[in-house]
Image (cartoon, rainbow, N blue to C red):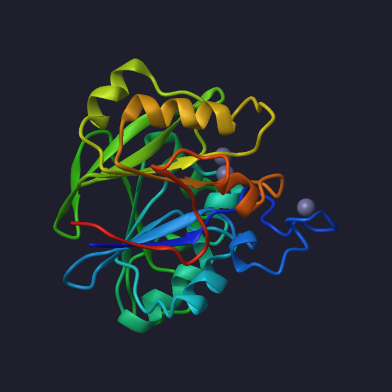
Length: 254
Ligand SMILES: [Zn+2]
Ligand SMILES: [Zn+2]
Ligand SMILES: [Zn+2]
């Protein structure tokens, strides 16, 4: 399995509109962050996508994506969902309906806001052709087992996902006690790390590092960062098993 980090930005992305700070004006591509998403390419070439950000088109062009076989939605905030319409391109290329998975309230939200995308294949592929599925326990997608892990994002309960020994955990403020049982033996962790100052619905750097220590993964990659966190300055502050994620980062998983 291969993980490709598509974006590590927070909801505003970096550079942020109208900002002239050191991160936003940095020439280093690792300081240019599209909205938060990753994809997993399986050995047989199938692609599982985490969320559909408003930057999905840009991410797909950059990574030369030609297929998406399933989408796992962590939650339905605009920065994780509103690129849903761009799934149309993959439906058109592969002439296939794409299944979406998430928790009940998220699926209801998608049905209400993007109902036109949920449709059966027909001879026209002028709209996205998607199918929404509620998942509340481990399930199989593209031949691999995926485990949804409930986590708190402020007052809402959203999903992190585990595939093998990889966990993708964005937009988290706390992990319920019961979810730690699903996090045993994690090797590679992608985790929210919004900024230094506290936030009601996201962990900050200090809290992110505390959760990392608690979970004990071998390799930890910070995602969903605002422009307050400059790549090199943050890297210099991290323990050896934690790295600052960046758009385009590739991780090979065994
Ligand atoms: Zn977000
Ligand atoms: Zn800035
Ligand atoms: Zn969110």
